[in-house]
Amino acid sequence: WGWLSAQQETKKMKKLQVVTYNIHKGFSQFKRRMSVHDLRERLRGIGADVVFLQEVQGLHEKHSARHHNWPAAPQYEFLADSIWNDFAYGKNAIYDGGHHGNAILSKYPIARWDNEDISMHDSEHRGLLHCEIAVPGWPHTLHCINVHLGLLGHWRRKQITLMKDRIEKLVPADAPLVIAGDFNDWRRHASEALADSLNVSEVFETTSGRPARSYPAILPMLHLDRIYVRGFSIELARAHHGRAWSRVSDHIALSARLIRKA
Image (cartoon, rainbow, N blue to C red; front, side, top):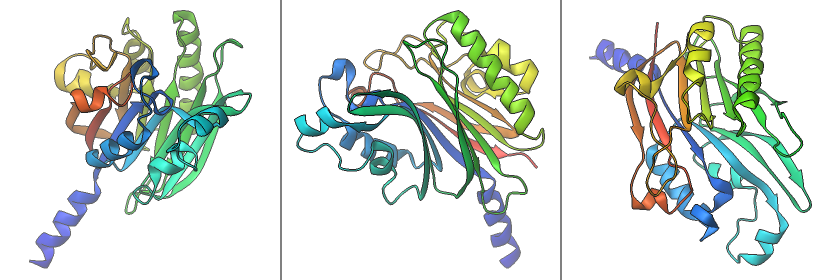
């Protein structure tokens, strides 16, 4: 029985649940309602080990003054709370009285992290948040790349090249890798650019033949958000549709249950 228990524990440790979500700075579609409290409950319900968030409000003095229940802590700390013990925040856009960017929340220790500026124009500030996570029992750290790419196609192509260059330089070929975020890739070109050069696969393309529809939340039509992986098999990929989710952000959340390959 002890041998069976050890096998089950080893199998459990090979699994990783991830979620990516553009949280629209804690507001619903068209900013009709402040939704960051509902967002925290929705995220907890998924039970992810690692959470990739885009459009995270680090500070907004006007929202804080206007909304009586606006969290006192930055959104990434408020969302992490007691569930995700570690987090990293990449500040991308800075303005009077506030800033926002990408964040990664993790149940496991973040060994190191860096936020690379991949902005292509002063009108649109973008970053690439790269974390190395020490998952207990894994021989290599887990590399996580959180991105929010530009609105114009030629900007996205340059940003994907910057991302590929970083991964080829800093991520060992045998290290597990997850790239997730809002790719703004409605024409579905990102996979062509990433698959061959980085040997990654997109979880929904693998399980259902095409990326998930993730925008707008109320009736998802466009394939904007992605989860790419290397060194994993995909047990489950899920797009979190429904009225409860459509009231939280203008995107929907995408999650995947992964199994690390030996």
